[in-house]
Image (cartoon, rainbow, N blue to C red; front, top):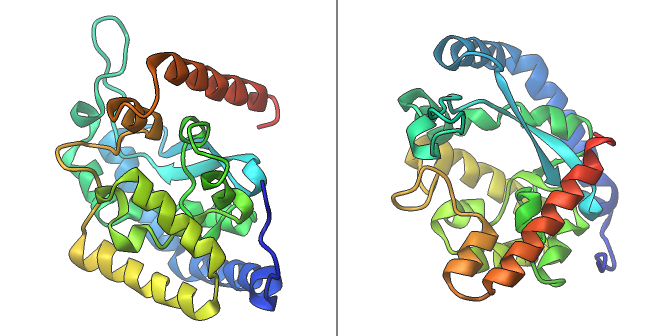
Length: 239
């Protein structure tokens, strides 16, 4: 994976310093918001309050991403989880529509696993389907929001989403990050657009998209899914 060349002072030092300061300030000023949302999640959806999931971070180091839980644990008679659309409650939809479910990621930012602005951390099973060029998005810390999120979020095609990520890592500036930050606030709390794909509770995985579009064979799909599972199994001990 090729790294970014000729990093600016902002990219090398300023961005992380600003992320750390802002995330700590947000925690101090708005801890009560996190507390209220946590109590609502506990009351509406039960325990656990937090949803934890391994995601590839900078240099593809896998970390645990934290979100507020937005789905129930309802299962069928065989003990299998019901489809997402059946487990996503009205309250959960509201959390996602306002992006309040993303608030715990501020702890990922404090820990240095994420940035405020950057390519969104995708699933490990998405990463293995990316081309070497697309995987360059992992040269930087993943973000709470990014260029793709303010240009359609999950409503845009995967290829466009990944293209936005690559465009972002090639043009990281303070002014650009500020613009994305304020566009994110407007879209999340005013327009509430592009949260999921049309007719779906959650966005389709990249591998599923490629298989549906016949860009990969079933054999290749199964092989890459097995690679993703192996990566996660190897990471469990570290996490």
